[in-house]
Image (cartoon, rainbow, N blue to C red):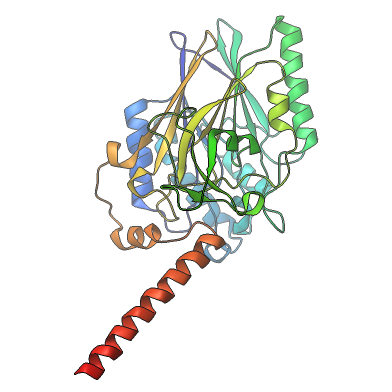
Length: 363
Protein backbone atom coordinates (compact mmCIF):
# COMPACT_ATOMS: atom_id res chain seq x y z
CA UNK A 1 0.00 0.00 0.00
CA UNK A 2 1.33 3.45 -0.87
CA UNK A 3 0.39 6.79 0.64
CA UNK A 4 1.54 10.25 -0.39
CA UNK A 5 3.28 13.25 1.11
CA UNK A 6 1.39 16.55 1.10
CA UNK A 7 3.66 19.54 0.58
CA UNK A 8 6.60 17.30 1.59
CA UNK A 9 4.96 16.46 4.94
CA UNK A 10 3.31 13.33 6.28
CA UNK A 11 1.88 12.84 9.78
CA UNK A 12 1.42 9.53 11.61
CA UNK A 13 -0.58 9.20 14.82
CA UNK A 14 0.43 6.21 16.95
CA UNK A 15 -2.14 4.91 19.44
CA UNK A 16 -0.79 2.37 21.92
CA UNK A 17 -2.46 0.04 24.39
CA UNK A 18 -6.12 0.93 24.30
CA UNK A 19 -6.67 -2.54 25.84
CA UNK A 20 -10.43 -2.40 25.74
CA UNK A 21 -12.90 -5.09 26.75
CA UNK A 22 -16.55 -5.40 25.84
CA UNK A 23 -17.26 -2.11 27.57
CA UNK A 24 -15.27 0.74 26.02
CA UNK A 25 -14.00 3.66 28.06
CA UNK A 26 -15.51 7.00 27.07
CA UNK A 27 -12.30 8.61 28.30
CA UNK A 28 -10.17 6.52 25.94
CA UNK A 29 -12.44 7.54 23.10
CA UNK A 30 -12.33 11.21 24.13
CA UNK A 31 -8.54 11.10 24.00
CA UNK A 32 -8.48 9.54 20.53
CA UNK A 33 -11.12 11.92 19.18
CA UNK A 34 -9.30 14.98 20.55
CA UNK A 35 -5.93 13.86 19.21
CA UNK A 36 -7.25 13.22 15.71
CA UNK A 37 -9.20 16.45 15.70
CA UNK A 38 -6.13 18.43 16.77
CA UNK A 39 -3.58 16.84 14.45
CA UNK A 40 -5.51 15.66 11.36
CA UNK A 41 -3.06 12.81 10.73
CA UNK A 42 -2.48 11.26 7.32
CA UNK A 43 -2.26 7.78 8.83
CA UNK A 44 -3.17 6.25 12.20
CA UNK A 45 -1.37 3.21 13.59
CA UNK A 46 -2.77 1.19 16.48
CA UNK A 47 0.41 -0.38 17.84
CA UNK A 48 -0.81 -3.43 19.71
CA UNK A 49 -2.98 -4.50 22.65
CA UNK A 50 -6.04 -2.95 21.13
CA UNK A 51 -8.16 -5.42 23.12
CA UNK A 52 -7.69 -8.01 25.85
CA UNK A 53 -9.49 -10.24 28.29
CA UNK A 54 -10.54 -13.88 27.98
CA UNK A 55 -13.33 -13.43 30.49
CA UNK A 56 -14.64 -10.39 28.65
CA UNK A 57 -14.83 -11.78 25.10
CA UNK A 58 -14.72 -15.58 25.62
CA UNK A 59 -13.81 -16.08 21.97
CA UNK A 60 -16.88 -14.24 20.68
CA UNK A 61 -15.90 -12.97 17.21
CA UNK A 62 -18.94 -10.73 16.89
CA UNK A 63 -18.08 -8.93 20.12
CA UNK A 64 -14.43 -8.62 19.07
CA UNK A 65 -15.50 -7.09 15.75
CA UNK A 66 -17.91 -4.71 17.48
CA UNK A 67 -15.17 -3.40 19.79
CA UNK A 68 -12.53 -3.15 17.05
CA UNK A 69 -14.96 -1.17 14.90
CA UNK A 70 -15.77 1.09 17.84
CA UNK A 71 -12.18 1.94 18.79
CA UNK A 72 -11.29 2.65 15.16
CA UNK A 73 -14.46 4.68 14.50
CA UNK A 74 -12.82 8.08 15.19
CA UNK A 75 -10.46 7.23 12.31
CA UNK A 76 -12.90 5.64 9.89
CA UNK A 77 -15.51 8.36 10.43
CA UNK A 78 -12.95 10.87 9.14
CA UNK A 79 -11.89 8.54 6.30
CA UNK A 80 -8.28 8.44 7.49
CA UNK A 81 -6.33 5.32 6.50
CA UNK A 82 -5.13 3.16 9.37
CA UNK A 83 -3.12 0.07 10.08
CA UNK A 84 -2.18 -2.03 13.10
CA UNK A 85 0.38 -4.27 14.63
CA UNK A 86 -0.36 -6.81 17.34
CA UNK A 87 0.77 -6.80 20.96
CA UNK A 88 1.06 -9.50 23.59
CA UNK A 89 -2.55 -9.20 24.84
CA UNK A 90 -4.66 -9.10 21.65
CA UNK A 91 -4.83 -12.86 21.23
CA UNK A 92 -5.95 -13.34 24.83
CA UNK A 93 -9.56 -12.65 23.85
CA UNK A 94 -9.87 -16.18 22.48
CA UNK A 95 -9.90 -15.03 18.86
CA UNK A 96 -6.57 -15.53 17.09
CA UNK A 97 -4.56 -12.71 15.58
CA UNK A 98 -5.14 -14.27 12.17
CA UNK A 99 -8.90 -14.07 12.73
CA UNK A 100 -8.65 -10.54 14.09
CA UNK A 101 -6.64 -9.47 11.05
CA UNK A 102 -9.48 -10.69 8.83
CA UNK A 103 -11.85 -8.53 10.89
CA UNK A 104 -9.63 -5.47 10.42
CA UNK A 105 -9.63 -6.10 6.67
CA UNK A 106 -13.40 -5.62 6.66
CA UNK A 107 -13.17 -2.18 8.27
CA UNK A 108 -13.19 0.77 5.88
CA UNK A 109 -9.85 2.52 5.60
CA UNK A 110 -7.72 -0.37 6.83
CA UNK A 111 -4.60 -0.66 4.67
CA UNK A 112 -2.68 -3.34 6.55
CA UNK A 113 -1.25 -6.43 4.96
CA UNK A 114 0.36 -9.57 6.34
CA UNK A 115 3.46 -10.94 4.65
CA UNK A 116 3.32 -14.70 4.13
CA UNK A 117 6.15 -17.03 5.05
CA UNK A 118 7.45 -15.28 8.15
CA UNK A 119 6.48 -15.52 11.81
CA UNK A 120 3.72 -13.40 13.27
CA UNK A 121 0.67 -11.69 11.82
CA UNK A 122 0.51 -8.27 10.22
CA UNK A 123 4.16 -7.80 9.30
CA UNK A 124 4.13 -5.34 6.40
CA UNK A 125 5.68 -2.23 4.91
CA UNK A 126 3.86 0.91 3.75
CA UNK A 127 5.33 3.22 1.13
CA UNK A 128 4.94 6.96 1.57
CA UNK A 129 5.58 8.58 -1.80
CA UNK A 130 6.31 11.91 -3.37
CA UNK A 131 6.15 12.23 -7.17
CA UNK A 132 5.52 8.48 -7.45
CA UNK A 133 8.76 7.61 -5.64
CA UNK A 134 8.91 6.27 -2.07
CA UNK A 135 10.55 8.83 0.23
CA UNK A 136 9.79 6.95 3.45
CA UNK A 137 8.93 3.39 4.42
CA UNK A 138 6.93 2.41 7.48
CA UNK A 139 7.57 -1.11 8.77
CA UNK A 140 4.92 -2.59 11.07
CA UNK A 141 6.19 -5.68 12.87
CA UNK A 142 4.60 -8.32 15.09
CA UNK A 143 6.73 -8.45 18.26
CA UNK A 144 4.85 -11.55 19.48
CA UNK A 145 3.75 -12.33 23.01
CA UNK A 146 4.92 -13.60 26.38
CA UNK A 147 7.05 -16.63 27.07
CA UNK A 148 6.69 -18.76 30.21
CA UNK A 149 8.86 -16.07 31.79
CA UNK A 150 9.14 -12.66 30.17
CA UNK A 151 8.64 -11.66 26.55
CA UNK A 152 9.53 -13.06 23.16
CA UNK A 153 11.53 -11.14 20.55
CA UNK A 154 11.18 -10.40 16.87
CA UNK A 155 12.24 -13.61 15.08
CA UNK A 156 15.12 -14.13 12.69
CA UNK A 157 12.94 -14.65 9.61
CA UNK A 158 11.23 -11.31 10.29
CA UNK A 159 14.64 -9.64 10.51
CA UNK A 160 15.63 -11.34 7.25
CA UNK A 161 12.41 -10.05 5.65
CA UNK A 162 13.25 -6.50 6.76
CA UNK A 163 16.80 -6.80 5.38
CA UNK A 164 15.61 -8.22 2.07
CA UNK A 165 12.95 -5.52 1.71
CA UNK A 166 15.42 -2.77 2.54
CA UNK A 167 17.98 -4.11 0.08
CA UNK A 168 15.41 -4.52 -2.72
CA UNK A 169 14.45 -0.86 -2.41
CA UNK A 170 18.11 0.14 -2.37
CA UNK A 171 18.80 -1.88 -5.50
CA UNK A 172 15.77 -0.43 -7.30
CA UNK A 173 16.32 3.24 -6.42
CA UNK A 174 20.08 3.36 -5.97
CA UNK A 175 19.92 4.30 -2.28
CA UNK A 176 18.29 3.14 0.91
CA UNK A 177 14.85 4.60 1.66
CA UNK A 178 14.51 6.42 5.01
CA UNK A 179 12.29 4.36 7.27
CA UNK A 180 10.60 4.14 10.62
CA UNK A 181 9.45 1.06 12.52
CA UNK A 182 6.45 0.66 14.79
CA UNK A 183 6.01 -2.46 16.93
CA UNK A 184 4.54 -3.23 20.33
CA UNK A 185 7.39 -4.54 22.51
CA UNK A 186 10.60 -2.47 22.59
CA UNK A 187 14.05 -3.62 21.57
CA UNK A 188 16.49 -4.24 24.48
CA UNK A 189 18.56 -1.23 23.39
CA UNK A 190 15.89 1.05 24.85
CA UNK A 191 17.79 0.63 28.14
CA UNK A 192 20.64 2.67 26.66
CA UNK A 193 18.47 5.74 27.25
CA UNK A 194 18.45 5.04 31.00
CA UNK A 195 20.87 5.47 33.87
CA UNK A 196 21.34 2.71 36.43
CA UNK A 197 21.20 4.21 39.92
CA UNK A 198 21.10 3.14 43.55
CA UNK A 199 17.87 1.95 45.11
CA UNK A 200 16.15 4.88 46.75
CA UNK A 201 17.23 7.42 44.15
CA UNK A 202 14.39 9.86 43.54
CA UNK A 203 12.21 8.69 40.68
CA UNK A 204 14.09 5.40 40.24
CA UNK A 205 12.12 2.48 38.80
CA UNK A 206 12.76 -1.10 39.85
CA UNK A 207 13.89 -3.44 37.09
CA UNK A 208 12.61 -6.98 36.77
CA UNK A 209 13.31 -10.16 34.82
CA UNK A 210 16.47 -9.32 32.82
CA UNK A 211 16.95 -6.21 34.94
CA UNK A 212 16.16 -7.74 38.32
CA UNK A 213 18.00 -6.08 41.17
CA UNK A 214 18.64 -2.90 39.20
CA UNK A 215 17.09 0.55 39.44
CA UNK A 216 16.80 3.09 36.63
CA UNK A 217 16.03 6.70 35.86
CA UNK A 218 15.90 8.46 32.51
CA UNK A 219 19.19 9.79 31.20
CA UNK A 220 18.17 13.42 30.79
CA UNK A 221 21.16 14.01 28.50
CA UNK A 222 19.69 11.55 25.98
CA UNK A 223 15.90 11.85 26.12
CA UNK A 224 13.41 14.61 25.39
CA UNK A 225 12.97 17.10 28.21
CA UNK A 226 9.29 16.38 28.84
CA UNK A 227 9.70 12.58 28.73
CA UNK A 228 8.77 10.40 31.69
CA UNK A 229 9.38 6.83 32.86
CA UNK A 230 7.18 5.40 35.59
CA UNK A 231 8.03 1.73 35.08
CA UNK A 232 11.10 -0.23 34.07
CA UNK A 233 11.16 -1.48 30.46
CA UNK A 234 9.62 -4.91 29.88
CA UNK A 235 11.85 -5.74 26.92
CA UNK A 236 12.49 -9.21 25.41
CA UNK A 237 14.34 -11.84 27.40
CA UNK A 238 16.73 -12.36 24.47
CA UNK A 239 18.28 -9.85 22.11
CA UNK A 240 17.57 -11.23 18.64
CA UNK A 241 19.71 -8.67 16.84
CA UNK A 242 16.74 -6.75 15.42
CA UNK A 243 18.08 -3.33 16.36
CA UNK A 244 21.57 -4.21 15.10
CA UNK A 245 20.07 -5.12 11.72
CA UNK A 246 18.21 -1.84 11.57
CA UNK A 247 21.37 0.20 12.16
CA UNK A 248 23.38 -1.47 9.39
CA UNK A 249 22.70 1.00 6.59
CA UNK A 250 21.30 4.10 8.29
CA UNK A 251 17.86 3.82 6.71
CA UNK A 252 15.90 3.48 9.96
CA UNK A 253 15.41 6.91 11.51
CA UNK A 254 13.08 5.93 14.34
CA UNK A 255 11.55 2.96 16.17
CA UNK A 256 8.47 3.50 18.31
CA UNK A 257 6.87 1.15 20.81
CA UNK A 258 3.99 0.77 23.26
CA UNK A 259 3.70 -2.06 25.81
CA UNK A 260 4.86 -0.24 28.95
CA UNK A 261 1.91 2.07 29.51
CA UNK A 262 3.62 4.35 32.00
CA UNK A 263 6.48 5.43 29.74
CA UNK A 264 6.73 8.24 27.21
CA UNK A 265 10.18 9.31 26.08
CA UNK A 266 12.47 9.13 23.09
CA UNK A 267 16.13 9.63 22.26
CA UNK A 268 18.94 8.68 19.91
CA UNK A 269 20.74 5.35 20.14
CA UNK A 270 23.29 4.76 17.37
CA UNK A 271 21.55 7.33 15.20
CA UNK A 272 18.06 5.85 15.63
CA UNK A 273 15.37 7.65 17.61
CA UNK A 274 13.96 5.05 20.03
CA UNK A 275 10.67 6.04 21.59
CA UNK A 276 8.02 4.83 23.99
CA UNK A 277 4.40 5.85 23.50
CA UNK A 278 2.36 5.81 26.69
CA UNK A 279 -0.89 3.89 26.96
CA UNK A 280 -4.07 5.49 25.66
CA UNK A 281 -6.52 3.21 27.46
CA UNK A 282 -8.39 4.13 30.62
CA UNK A 283 -9.60 0.58 31.33
CA UNK A 284 -6.09 -0.52 32.22
CA UNK A 285 -3.24 0.88 34.29
CA UNK A 286 -1.60 4.04 32.93
CA UNK A 287 0.07 7.35 33.72
CA UNK A 288 -3.05 9.09 35.05
CA UNK A 289 -3.97 12.12 32.93
CA UNK A 290 -0.70 11.77 31.02
CA UNK A 291 -2.23 8.95 29.03
CA UNK A 292 -1.75 9.91 25.44
CA UNK A 293 -0.72 9.22 21.86
CA UNK A 294 2.34 9.95 19.72
CA UNK A 295 2.64 12.15 16.65
CA UNK A 296 5.40 11.24 14.18
CA UNK A 297 6.05 13.86 11.51
CA UNK A 298 7.92 12.76 8.41
CA UNK A 299 9.54 15.08 5.88
CA UNK A 300 10.23 13.92 2.36
CA UNK A 301 13.85 15.09 2.85
CA UNK A 302 14.30 12.07 5.15
CA UNK A 303 14.01 13.75 8.55
CA UNK A 304 11.55 13.08 11.38
CA UNK A 305 10.12 14.85 14.39
CA UNK A 306 7.99 13.40 17.18
CA UNK A 307 6.09 14.40 20.30
CA UNK A 308 3.28 13.05 22.43
CA UNK A 309 -0.17 14.46 23.12
CA UNK A 310 -1.56 14.02 26.64
CA UNK A 311 -5.13 13.72 27.83
CA UNK A 312 -4.79 16.56 30.34
CA UNK A 313 -3.66 18.93 27.59
CA UNK A 314 -6.10 18.08 24.80
CA UNK A 315 -9.17 16.84 26.70
CA UNK A 316 -8.88 18.31 30.19
CA UNK A 317 -8.49 17.36 33.83
CA UNK A 318 -11.84 15.60 34.30
CA UNK A 319 -12.78 12.03 33.42
CA UNK A 320 -16.21 10.50 32.98
CA UNK A 321 -15.50 7.21 34.76
CA UNK A 322 -14.15 8.54 38.05
CA UNK A 323 -14.27 5.30 40.06
CA UNK A 324 -12.57 3.18 37.40
CA UNK A 325 -9.97 5.90 36.95
CA UNK A 326 -9.27 5.93 40.70
CA UNK A 327 -8.89 2.14 40.78
CA UNK A 328 -6.45 2.07 37.89
CA UNK A 329 -4.39 4.83 39.50
CA UNK A 330 -3.37 2.40 42.26
CA UNK A 331 -3.08 -0.71 40.09
CA UNK A 332 0.50 -2.11 40.11
CA UNK A 333 2.23 -2.56 36.78
CA UNK A 334 3.86 -5.93 37.53
CA UNK A 335 4.15 -8.67 40.11
CA UNK A 336 7.18 -7.09 41.79
CA UNK A 337 5.31 -3.83 42.28
CA UNK A 338 2.28 -5.78 43.49
CA UNK A 339 4.29 -7.58 46.14
CA UNK A 340 6.03 -4.37 47.18
CA UNK A 341 2.76 -2.47 47.33
CA UNK A 342 1.06 -5.37 49.13
CA UNK A 343 3.69 -5.31 51.87
CA UNK A 344 3.13 -1.59 52.34
CA UNK A 345 -0.63 -2.08 52.59
CA UNK A 346 -0.19 -4.82 55.20
CA UNK A 347 2.09 -2.57 57.25
CA UNK A 348 -0.35 0.35 57.08
CA UNK A 349 -3.26 -1.90 58.12
CA UNK A 350 -1.22 -3.33 60.97
CA UNK A 351 -0.43 0.17 62.23
CA UNK A 352 -4.10 1.17 62.03
CA UNK A 353 -5.19 -1.96 63.92
CA UNK A 354 -2.49 -1.38 66.54
CA UNK A 355 -3.65 2.22 67.04
CA UNK A 356 -7.27 1.10 67.37
CA UNK A 357 -6.32 -1.50 70.00
CA UNK A 358 -4.17 1.02 71.84
CA UNK A 359 -6.93 3.61 71.92
CA UNK A 360 -9.44 0.95 73.02
CA UNK A 361 -7.20 -0.01 75.95
CA UNK A 362 -6.65 3.62 76.90
CA UNK A 363 -10.36 4.25 76.91
